Figure 1 (tube, each protein chain N blue to C red):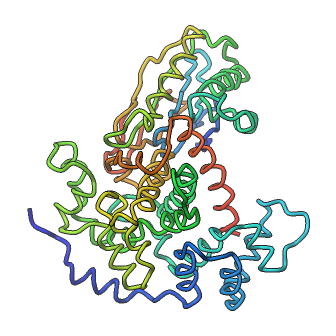
Figure 2 (figure 1 turned 180 degrees about the vertical axis):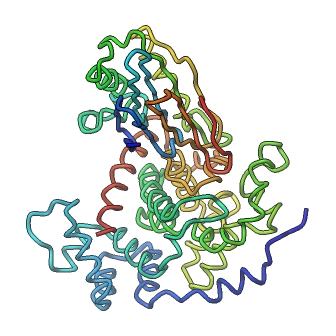
Length: 287
Length: 162
């Protein structure tokens, strides 16, 4: 099978991406540090006026129903939590990447952002059921960025994607990721990983992006985080928050059972809570 | 043509000419669809979970989210448009209930949704005339008042009638 995607063209597209602002990068690095405190996040946001404005706008969105207007970033952060600030910073720094339709996946405008935001919230909910200590907001951030590779890969994937579903149904490949590899010679997780390296994202987030469909391949210390996002991604697809033709065309890795206590009831709670928080987050981020 | 778009946990019905009831990307959720051949009314509920006892607060806020409460409300909604309040004579179709590949019992929410809906349909003496459920693909479904047709769309797979 010919590999129709030109790796060099993909590399050039990634090279052209604007870098993250220093405040956004600092935020992601702080979040990836398990010993960070809310005050560390406040300090970074305070020195970025555009980010401060967006955070205040979000917290005063009608969806939160606050009686009194919040005007201080400290209060806004303690109310919204770090995860909403991360969402705003990522949204600001990725421009149109998240919002454009993914041609190769036949998804609609905004579907990638919706999928990643839902996955972020679901990954955090999954992390609540961890058997050990867990940084919930890092799980959120990993979920938010896990599929970023599709934003660049989708336009290259457009032609080759025609045969992907047929290959899966005929048993030629076992899932959508293998179809991407077989037909294009690379897949969205590899492209995302190169984007994360270009942006100099923390290694834990790079691992999530590269391994979220095969979490057992991540190095041992990263596996709990990568498994949380693996499950969060699946919950998002089950809830119908997907990115088009690849929806549900991936394998569940049962290795998550080593790290999380997930019963059918727990999973139903995760779906419920994630859907409720997603509705609020989506509305406030649009405001 | 006027479309009634249902989100997750929503239910709705229509019987005016040109009316369409539609819901997007069902995933493991299931659309229970009711058709009344006598009045031409059509209705749908977008069910996400099988049993409301898991969360009483959510059950009060969004009853349509759950198979046990959603079906009752949909039959009541159809009754407002002239269908029998006991559901007798209604045609039932089920769409959705997909799952991830290699799912285990924990992740088999789609199948549990389908079984729960069938159980509650039996209480009304009803059963699905047709169903397009399971598999590993997310479905968008539209129901047309004028023709009574139930059309399923799926990215990359085209569309078909149930």
